[in-house]
Image (tube, rainbow, N blue to C red):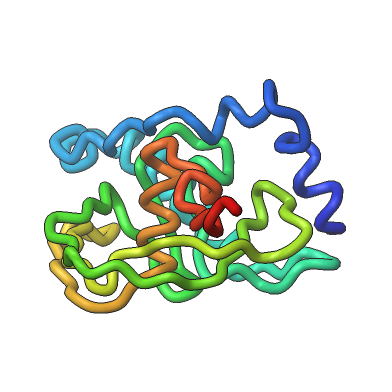
Amino acid sequence: MKHEDFCVLYRYPADRDILTRKLFDVNLRLYKSSAQYQRIVRDCGAYILWCAQTEKEGYKKPHGYSGANAGIPFNIIATPEEVMLNPKIIVASDEMVESVSNCGSLCLDSPIPIQRHAKITFTYYDLDLVLHQVTGRYFTIQHEIDHNNGVLIWDRETKGEEG
């Protein structure tokens, strides 16, 4: 798959609407009680995981992928290693770090300088509904959670001083 084809939905401002909406949390009670709902969520998670593991022609392999990137309305993200249901940042350090980042969904020509929290604590459920709490320097997780909350990378862009 060529990266240009992959991005076609996100080339025009009106089409980016899909990336600026907050996604729905997976209903964990329904996930436990309904085999059909669980199958839908697991299939969505498997697709998002596949996307996180798949290199697009002309663009490097992603570090993570979100439901928003895939056009799936559930708060699900994946790294190449795992699927995370309902990820939420529960603590974010006051210290901010400037980094340079890009976003495959927006087809940026080059990385832009952005602000991220130096350290976060976030929670998520795995597909077996085990709750995980993780603390560390997770820029990719922050980026994917932003996607699922309707925040785009250029909302975090660091602007140079106006002269």
